[in-house]
Amino acid sequence: MCPHRRLLPFLGLVILLSCSQRRGRGAAGAIAQELATADALFAQRADPAALEAAIRAYLDLHRRLPGDSRVLWRLSRAYTLRGYAADGPDRVNDMLTGREYGLRCLLQRPEFAASVQGASGVVTADALVDLTEDDLPCLAWSTLSWARWLHARGPAGAAIDLDVVEAMGRKVAELGGESFGGGRALAAEGLALSLRPLMLGGTLEEARQSLEQAAAAAPDRLTPKADLALLVLIPQGKTAAADAVLREILDHPVRESDPDHPENLRAQQRARQALGLEPPPEATALD
Image (cartoon, rainbow, N blue to C red; front, side):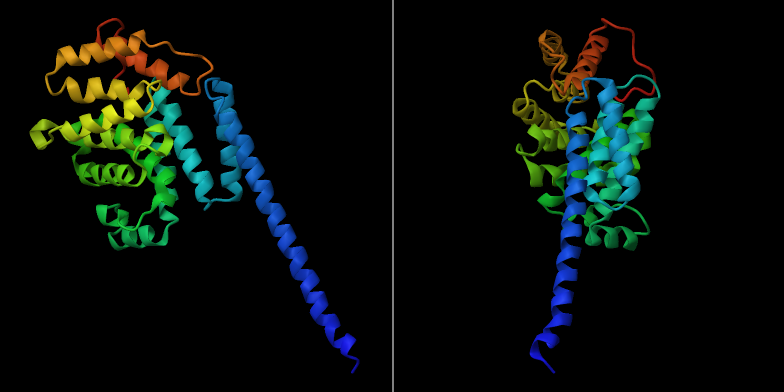
């Protein structure tokens, strides 16, 4: 047989594989572009219409890529932040949705999923052991949404989840420190560690340190300061220090062009309510 003929099937296979790889790279590039477009909308979230458009774009990607961690953590982030800034009962629903997407994201990690399955579907501190920096977005946003939701329920409703959420807060700070999200990891740790009431053995000192560091890492983001004042200093009986932080929040200029604008407005609203300058929030408020 002619040696050139023997090469023909091989060359055909090479061409087929090359075309397949190009199509694969093309599909991956298209997804990356869609994510970039949705992220650009999310960056304009000071405009509620842009935030809604970003969520719709993420949901469309999720329908096509239900197990894609890149999409899942972005959905967790979007719902968590929308819930925090919102008024009324939608706050709780959004926090629960943010928690759900965040945990789904973590479940894409085989070790995490195996640990949860081994614990009869319950997330425990053991499931966090093998998480790495690659898991930070999933872990940070599931921690933030879960912890703030538990604050809304109160100590009695939160007791069953305290251990795992505290462990999540410590893990996200261990992995992310000040570098992740401009203090988001430290804010997640502080929010989680502020859950345990003094009567249940909480000291709030670790929470205070984490929230102070989070505030220092992102001085123009006012929520860590609001959490510090309302969830740590006031429960510790340090009302004068809390009032000083709350007035600092109210004096801080809030720019409409800042992506954190909705969060900052919510932090200022919480400060005014705490100082008696506004009516108290609804019972479902996530403070």
